[in-house]
Each structure stands twice: as structure tokens, then as C-alpha cells.
Length: 494
Image (cartoon, rainbow, N blue to C red; front, side):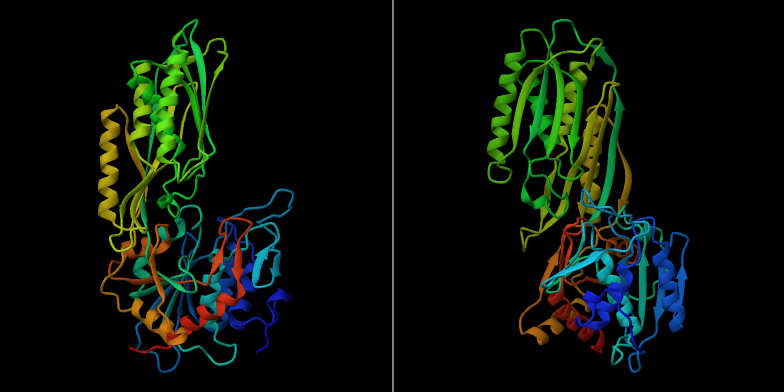
């Protein structure tokens, strides 16, 4: 059968079956919530080949692919990838993710998109699944019975996988293709418990003669609250809490008028306006400088450009603020709910098992205080207990930390019989050991393993960088070794 490539730049690349299907799906618009075209494409793929295919109410596609000849009795394998992509566009680029196909480009060994995300996250997974199931480029690829799960809306909260009826899954071996790379196998990822504090405080008019101070925290590096939590970077919300608390620790008082934060992961900036009594401005500034000097020393090696400015601002007529007592409580909770590592792996200390992060906090002129926090862990009991401690801490300060979302972590399985197959295949092909890693990111494997505890899972994908950004790249030469390992694992009989 002849195949016509939708992107000329992919023709002639090896492995041909992978790059052909990568091009097919890249041409289909599939922003989160707009996966209808992709769903219809997968239904057509299955119908043409006679595969059983179900689409649930959420839009998840579940396909059954029979084993190739001689592999009918081998253990079935579940492959899982998400259909949707993150819709990022460079300034000045006109692109409609609802209708436009990705404009793919190639430079040397790299494939990227023109001013948008490429969709390698998680197009590489879909391409792998279709290439294995199709088997019509040259000789069919030997494989056991396959269950292919294509999920929707992963990028906006793992929504599709969490709505999927996992009782449909019969396989007890799984490959998630949203983690790992061509030379690295992922064996564990984090789950999450998310909670928020929402409380409205009584506001009092700012007393005549009060000094208003604007505190600005800036220059922080920020970063991903999962993958970069081990970088020991400063959270601007934690720091702002420390600064507010320092005023009261010095026997002074302040009233919070407003506060904002910047960054949805490790927050890198925060601004607050406080009212202090007439004549105490310099003493308050000294208290802030003293505490910030301590914080700067803590983060000197990890967040060297973290900076603070304190300036006097003019009070607006009718301006109000929280009471000193409530201001201190808000400062305390922001300083006590920590952003950072909680527990690390004993074998590889750089690997984080559990962590927590404040993602956002603000306080407005209506007295509304908001704080969004989550724990991450590959250990469900660990994140449960950590979250419970902060619920208790908030209660002591007259607040309620309410859980609004959770999904399971994927703990490393010590008795895995599936992971060694990858290690053996890699060693036989390349003569060296494969890297094996636990990651602190959250992927759909955690949802599935949480519901099917005896699932033996691995994460594996070809090397790509820059996911969720317009700098996303897929490395052409890294697909071949990935594909060689994948085919060897599929062909290895028990």
C-alpha cells in the first residue's frame, strides 16, 4: 500500500511508519476541548482495519488490536496517550487552533512548528500506537494483543482519563507515552491533591495619617511546581508571607490592603500594599529589610536575582484594609504552607517523592482572600497526610483549606516483570544500561494505576523538548533508537 505524506519534510525519514502517522495527526486540529476531528480520524482508522473501537461520552477512544500471528497467548499491553495539545502562539503569528493544521518545519535534526506548539506532546504517543496497529510499512510488527486508549483534555487536568471506565481495560501491562525519552524509562509519577482557601475578611477604613507601603518581590526564577520543585527556588507567596509576619515579630503592626501574585506554578513575583501607623514607616521598612536579607541568603545559590523593593504610595480616598489581626493570620498561612520538597528518594536524592506548592494567592479591596495549594506525590498516603496537616494548620488560623481535586500517584513497582523487558532490549541493542527514572510530573498513568493497582506500568517516548511552548522540538535521530527498543519489547515472548 502506498502512503501519501501530508508533510513533504517527513518523507524519507526513518522509521517511516512512525513519521507517516505523526504527520497525519499533526495535520488535525486538536486543542484541548476540540478533539472531535481526531476522534473521527481514529474511528475511521479502526473501522478500516476491522478493530473494535469504543468512544465514551467524554470522547476517549478505546481500541482493541488483535495480536499478530504467534503472539495470541502473550500478555496484552495497554498503550495510552492523549489527543489534545496546548495552544501556545508567538506574538504576531496568526493561527487558529480550531481549524488550522500545524505548520511544521525542519532544521537539521529537529522538527518544530512555525510559531506554535508542535504537538509532539503527545503526538509521538498517538503515532506509535497507530504505527504498531497498522503494520503495513514493510513487514507487520510482531506484538501481543494491544489495547489502545486515546484520551481527551489531558492538558487541562487529566480530564478524559479520569472520566474513562477503567473496567474496560483487561491488560495488566501498560505503556504511557507522555513521559520518559529515547534513552530513559519512567517508572513512577506523582499524583495530586489540590485545595483552596477562600475567606472574606471585614475591611476597615485606613486611618487618617497612615503610611502606605507597596512591597514588590521580583527577579525570581519561578518554574514548574512538579519538574522543577527540586531546584530550591523561592516562592514569592511564601516570601511575602514571611515579610508580613516579620512586621509583627518586631512588635509592629500592619494592615493588608491588597496583594497579588504572578505565576501559576512556583510563583516568581508578588506585590502587596500595606497600611502602617503614622510614624512607623521606617521601622517597618527596617523589619522588612532584616527578614528579606535572611531570605536572600537562603536562596543565594538557587534564586540569585530575587529582589525586593518597598516604596511609599499615596492612599486613595476611602481606602480600606484588613485588621492587623487578620493581616497577621494571612501572613502566617502564606509563610507556613510551604512550596518545596517534602520527601526525597533515598537512593537518588535528586528524585522528589513528595512536595507541595502554593500556585496563587491574592487579597482584594473587598476583603476576599484566596490561596490555591496542592501536594504532589507518587505515594498517595504521603500526600494525604501532608495535605491533612495543612488543613489543620489553616483551621488554627480560622481558615478552611478545602480539597477540590485529586488523583492518584503512580508508585514504582518493585516486582515489575514488564520494566526489565525494556532494560534487556536496550542493553542488547546499545550495549549499555538504560536510564530508569521516577518523575515528579503528573501523567495519566497515575489515574489508571490508581484504579488498577496490579497494573505493571512504564513510561517511554522519543526525545522531545519544549512541551507546552512554541519552542517544542522533536529530535529526528532520537526516534530510531526509541522505535528499535519498542519493537524489540513487543516482539519479546515470555
